[in-house]
Amino acid sequence: MIPDSVRLALPVEAAQIAAIQRRGWSQGLPAEVAESVLTSVDLDAMTRSWHAAITRPPLAQFRVLVAVTDDRVVGFAALGPSDDPDAEPGEDGIVAEFAIDPVAQRSGHGSRLLNACMDTLRADGFGRATWWVRSTDDALRRFLTESGWAPDGGHQEIGTGEDARLKLVRLHTDISA
Image 1 (cartoon, rainbow, N blue to C red):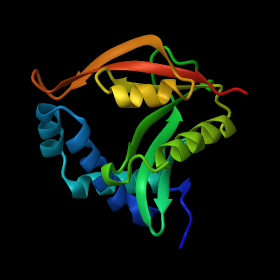
Image 2: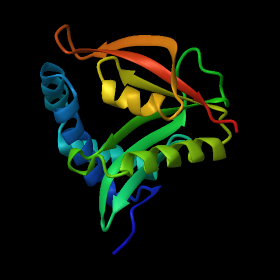
Image 3: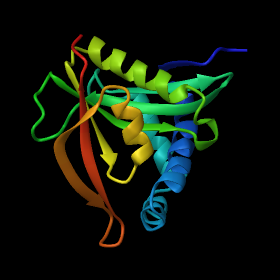
């Protein structure tokens, strides 16, 4: 039995990552947004995209991490330099994607993955980390604020149409220590 851990993703795990992302969208997004997003991209396309992110990242600082238990992936995170217009290059990193499989939540995987994200961003030379969170995702916001994150005033709205929009707020934390 392999202990619960976090490590860099392997190319062969791209399909597991895509499936977890789809299950997370189904569970966590409002129904109209989930339907719009899930019908706009299929599992095969998502798998190819994750495979490319793992094998051919645009910069060395782009990483895909996975939380594993036994022999299966139960969560993932994608991180790298922030591309926000107000980001300070070389200083601001971002957790761009983060998901724990709904069936594996509340087992410590999220905390392990979050800690690994911060350690990785810090090792890559970033002094701050940012994270865009759905304004209605109280559980994630609480998890992050209890871990030292705070809103920084950034907000945006994204979506695929008039009915499938999400409001996001940006949280940040100092990781220079």
